[in-house]
Image: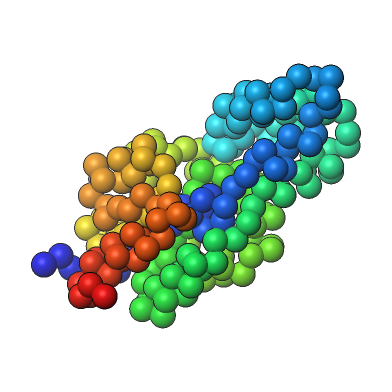
Length: 206
């Protein structure tokens, strides 16, 4: 039997909070600029520079405003950029439970300083975590193995004893290659996550 988990890496987007860029950003696109969903898709393909820390927030806002044909103030863009989240409270309950078991809880996310500053200020679930690895701070994006190795080294993790929860299959694949105990999360299949978690702790099926 595998050793009981001693730590857990949690992705943020679509694991701890739902993410809906369209809700926040498509209203910024003026009608004459064309299909707002196509504009948004093109913008999101360029986010890796911001998430890796190679582009500053001001540079990103300028680029994004031009791409979306948005001519309003930067504060309006920031507010829209940070309006994309909604809590997944079922997962917040799980986080509190794992904290009560004294697991080392680490946030592990491709994110940017605008989003994470807002999230840390507004959602109390993040207070449960004792560590954090954010792409824009370390200079690597998932699924690059470098960011995983950074987390393992920084927090002295034993991969075989570390749970890893993420919503994207390519991120999970890297985690599996490095020996982490992985689950690809979907809010619509939360019950499957609970079943997996029970198995990881050696609990009998309900």
